[in-house]
Amino acid sequence: MILKHYFATFIAVLALPILSIAQQTQSQQQPSNSIDVFVNRLMQQRQIPGLQLTVVRDGKIIKNANYGSANLEYSIKTKPETIFSINSITKAFVGVAIMQLAEDGKLKVTDPLSLHLDSLPADWQKVTLAQVLSHTSGLPDILDADEQVMGHGVEQVALDQVKKMPMEFKTGDRFGYNQTGYVLLGKIITKLSGVLFTKYIEDRQFKVAEMKLTRFGDSYDVIPNYAGAYTMTRQVGHSFVRNSSPGVAYMQFPEFFRTAAGIQSTATDMANWIIALTSGKLLKHQNSLSTLWTPAQLNNGKIGGFNQLTNGYALGWPTVTRDEHPAVAPVGGGRSAFFIYPKDNLSIVVLSNLMGANPDRFIDEIAGYYIPDMRESNGFGLPPVVKKLRAGLLKAGFNNTSQVIANLKKADPTIEFHENDLNNWGYQLLKQEKNKEALAIFTLNTTLHPQSANAYDSLGEMQEIMGNNKEAVINYKKSLSLNPENKNAGERLSALSAN
Image (tube, rainbow, N blue to C red):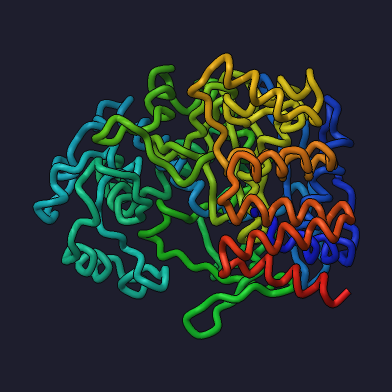
């Protein structure tokens, strides 16, 4: 079961105020109106106060829209000049800066750290710049257990502390998101360029790309038109609890840490930076861009990343490595993201002021408005075996799941349908309001995986959504018998009994 609080979420969405339709400054291609409806609905569901969206196609901005509130306290609307924190998207700028220095002949990405920095622990010395950029270094993290930068803002104190810590894993063995390496990269950029890394990035990237509103900063700085930050969680003791409405979040980044997260920008400025990067204004050679965007290989030959979607990490750039419509996809603070689809000449930038908005999870859906075969409703993103099942069911009908499965197994006896894949597809169909089809897939999942408490729980939810409460109760009870710890099934049974 994925949508554990489907009903509570649905009720919360209905109770939220309607957000203003986007104020568009450019719109040369439709389906702009459809996208606006989609974005406004998402903002309601996720309680995102303010958001900017910019779409770039074939090197030009074709949509530039602003939604909701930049500031809740003073009811200030989001405008084109509203500035958002992009948090860890800053790392993509650092990757470009390192490649610029490589093009200038001042370094190679294969250089060990010790070639450019002195007084490093022995275990750090052979780690390469590429391994640092791609988070495969194994270096200990300069963030403490409370996610605060060590040293209370003093660079040397922070470095002295982290240098005493053991490596987290053997270099290259796995992906491990790490901020220490980016502090070291800042020192290298400063040393080789002769200016502080912030000025180097300002001069070589902000100015070249005409990013007129972009700057380094944090919540401490007074930034005109700043959207600030909001969060749905707050700390109580050692735990975090979710609020019913957004609260103010505060972020401060010491200057030496601002290679990891320190840039403030607008979606328009970000789009101009993407255009400058992909058109050769920031990097001279095409192979530099290829190097920048190629995900690092681990020692076992595989790639590693944040999750199933952003499943690889290149030189400061998370990657969406897949056969269909691959992308490079920097993300920041769970609040902002942009995807570049190199094979499609399409880029989409989404900046928001809610930590936890996670726009990386819905940018593909926005892309689907421009590339129809990327729409979930057309099967985009489904595993290959599920796509085969979908094709068979579209032809034979969703009421013939058993026969379609039998035909597929006859053609390929080794074919398997994993529980999570079917469960995910069922919820996709539900989101698309294809309830009968979703019911068929959830039912199929219990047939193929009769020992899965999760499969019965999802089927129970689907039955309840369709008003079949008796069947829902049967499936919730079955789920509980398989997993007595299933809280959702227990809660839904209590709610149905109360009715």
